[in-house]
Each structure stands twice: as C-alpha cells, then as structure tokens.
Image 1: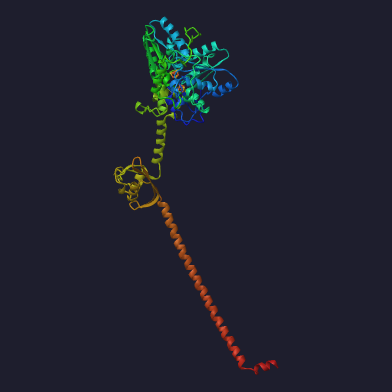
Image 2 (image 1 turned 60 degrees about the vertical axis):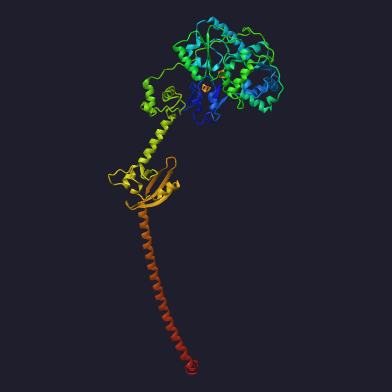
Length: 575
Ligand code: SF4
Ligand code: SF4
C-alpha cells in the first residue's frame, strides 16, 4: 500500500486536498487522481482536509491487536507531546492505560531524542563555521530530498529520535516489536523506510479512539511509572530542539534558529541555496509550532497553547519520579543516516509553453489570470506548470469552465427565437437579446434604458417585483405589435431583477382563431341541416296524417252505410 491511497470514487473534486498540499503532490487529471510519491513530503495535510474521506492512510491497529492477543510482546515509544494530547491528571495514567491495552514496555521517545541531541552536539562541534539543518522532522527531510537536494550536504546526518529510540529498545529487548505513538503522520513513512527500528506507528488520535473502544478513561486510572523515562532535553523536542544547556547557554559557538511551518521552511531552504548562512544551525519542523502542533492530535486534545504550557511544565518538572532513566553517551546505537537526492528532474516549461497552456485556459493576458486558487494551485502560472507536467488538466480551471458556460449561455440567449430581457427594480430594461429588439422596437431608439412599459404593459412585472415571485406561463397580448405571447418572468432575488422571456404565439393564436371559425360555421351548417330534416319529417308526418284521416272518414262512411241498410243489400248477398 502507498503511504496515502486515493479513492477516486469518493472524490468530489473540491480540490481541498490540493489547496492544502504544500508541494502540490496530488495529480488531478482525466485519467487519475493520485498522490505523487516524488513530491509528497508525507505531512498529512491533505488527509485532514478531505471532507469525503477519499484519502486513506494505513492503520495498523487491527494487526497490533491480533499480535497482542497471540502473545507478541510490544514496546511503546511514546512521544513527549502526549501530555497535551490527552485529558490526564498525571502523566503516569498514560502508562497505566497503555499497559491495559496489552503493551508490556512503555518508554518515552525523549530517550531517543537525547541520543540524537548528543550526536548533534558532536557533529556541530566538528563542522565549525558551516551552515547546518537538523534531521528530526521526516517531512522536512523529504522536502530537502525532493525539492532542495542542494542542501543535503548540510543536513546533520543523524536518524530521528523515533528511529534512535526504536533501535535502542530493540538492542536491549530481544524479539520485541516497537510501536511509536505520536501526533505525526510522516513518521509512518519514515518507519517503513528505515527498517529494523519501528514496527508500527499510530497517532494520538488513533490511540484515543482505541481507548474509547476499550472504555478506558485515562484520568480515572492510577498512575504507573515509565519503564524508561526521558531527559528534560529530550522532552523539549516537540517544542523545538533544546540546544541550550540547563543554564540556558548555547552548547557550541553556533547560532541556533528554529524554523517551523512549511512556508518558512521552504523560503529558508531557497535562501540557503542562494546565499548560505554560515555558523548557523537551523532546526526545521514542517508543522508550524513544531510537533506540538502536529497533524493528528485527538479532537478533544488540549488547545495548542495549552498543550505548550503543559509540555513545558512536564519538561521542567524535575521533582517527580516518572520512571528510571539511564545515563546516555550518544553511542548506544548507530544513528548515522544517509540522505539522498530524490528530486525528479524534468524539463522546465519555457515561457511560450506556459503561455500556450494559459491560452488554452482562456487566459490571453495577465489580466485574465485570476489567480483565484480554486483549482488548488497557488496561481495560474503554477497551474499551467502542473498541466505541462500532466498533473492537471486545463478544464479543471473554474474560471475557464465558467467562461465556457457563460459563452454557451450567451450563445443560447443571443440565438433564442424568444424575446429575452432583464429589468431592474425600477422597471427599466437593462439587457435584451436581438429577438426582443426585432419584435418590439422598430425604431432607432435604444431599447436598453427604457421603461418596460414602453413596449409591454407593466402590470405583470410590477406584481413579480412587489411579491418577489416568478410568474409562469402567462398569456399576454401586446397591441402595439399585435402579437400574443406566453410570458415567463423569473424573479432573481440576489440582484432584485427580473429575467423575462416572451414566446411569440401569434401564429398559434391565429390558427386557433381560424379553427374556431371553422367550428362555428360547421355548427351553423349542421343546425341548418337538422332544421331542414325536421321540416321534411314534419311535412311527411302531416301528409301521412291527412291520408290517414281521409281513409278513416271513408271507412266510417262505409260502415254507417252498411249499418243503415240492414236486411236489404246484405240479405241479397246471403241468398
Ligand atoms: S501528505 Fe502532504 S505532501 Fe503528501 S499529498 Fe498530502 S498534503 Fe501533499
Ligand atoms: S513537525 Fe513534528 S509532527 Fe510535524 S511533520 Fe515534522 S516531525 Fe511530524
């Protein structure tokens, strides 16, 4: 597994990680999102900034638990800043808590810091008059190796306190695994690179969660002593290396200067390359305020300056017995370290190449370079360089995308068959598209600046502004142009303006009218036919009635005749 894994399925392209990354070691291009090892100084700032948890770092806790339950013996090297990281009433409660988790040996990393300090003293004394930089902060070391390899000869060639302590524990305890616990993420990478000293690294935040899971409340525990306690000087490392002796005097003829924070460290390195400052030892710490302000303190840790106060008090407390100590001479373990040139040398883009990339991003003049930082880079030039190296794409530029969207938007509006205008809260036209002018204004007078009422009755617009609402699909007729429109008015609260769209439906209305006329005529015709049919029916009926009446009359006459002639004609017929 890489130091940091990037799960691109969780990434929502907010570029917060890239903005936070001091070396711009994250590539965001069409094909991939990844941390670039040759630039990453393992500071962990990106992890802290990602709101999506898309960046992940190895967490060895499950492995440690499994080791402990299968009887593997573990020692803890505990960074001195623990005192401000946890809610304790006494430092010894931390020892008890760690033993409860199953660790058999608890020592302070300050022991390793003392070994390192002794070696620094020796080297500084040998290199009289030179400029030097310390090697305690792995992120600062990575920064020099990756970005400023010219300074490698000036790094004090000594391992960090964590590595020195790990080696020292292993030298005294056979077959023991060593876990380092501190606020630093870079130590995880360092422990993997310099093998044989530290088996696992977890942060204070991870330890705090582990205690929570096990329902261990540190401040309620009894105290225990460290198996090996650190020196006063060693405990001072999280606040910056203590290069003065107990009387506050410098330990050599050199001047000592603490530099913390990425920006300060980088500008010092650039200055030292340009113009060496002889006779000075610079202590570099990437975290501003040194490890006391490291990246992974628990959420409920004491605040930064309270931590500083607690650490200072712990360091100066010579009265309390926190555990046995050993008189060291600095030769306990081999602390020599070699730093190597790891700068990725690439062709630097020339002026024209950068200019061409900026042009692709829609930046033709320096005025177009907004340097907004939205893409994650400090300015447009840095972004263009990243594009040149393939770490970023031109379309990741927000201004470029917005410009493109706005262009498309104005192309759409300008070519719309609908009349479009914007009106301010005084009902004055402030913008129109060509169709608006084509429909409503056949004069030479400029439309923009005129009241909307010049063209369209203002009632609907007044209503939208007064009620601060949008109006949807209202039919209006504009007598001056003899046209019908469907009107949509969008109220834009931010600017208190109306965006109005007029869809000309005059041809549809005309068709509708014609259709209605046809319907009307058809109805009339139908009625005529019905009336005529009725008349014919009535005539037939009356004719039918007349003949029936006549027949009836004839038959009745015949019947009367027959009845009157009884016995006469009828008798003859019978005979
Ligand atoms: S760990 Fe630091 S240097 Fe590496 S990618 Fe994250 S922010 Fe950048
Ligand atoms: S200053 Fe300390 S905590 Fe921060 S990166 Fe360096 S060693 Fe780690």
